Amino acid sequence: MPRRAKWQLAFLTRRASVFAIPKAADPAHAADNAAAAALVLTDEEIAAIDEAFPLGEEPASLPML
Image (cartoon, rainbow, N blue to C red; front, top):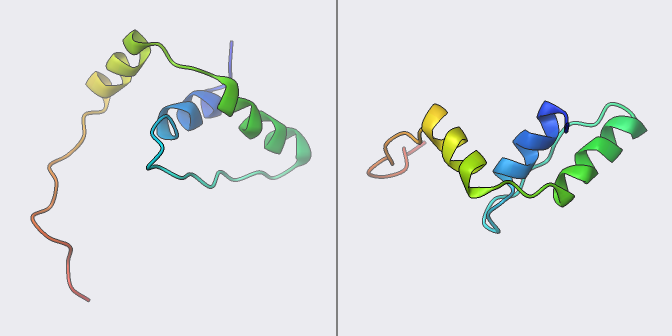
């Protein structure tokens, strides 16, 4: 069973438009992060995650600084 971080990275990076920079405190952690690229989530798993954590409303515009 993959570690939670692998699932999170696989979910976040399943779209080509998303880029993630995960923390890696040691070589084993970096290897774990790299292994997330091979994890393919099923449609059912993605739907369950989307249901548990729905996207919020898109802002009408970006805030000005």
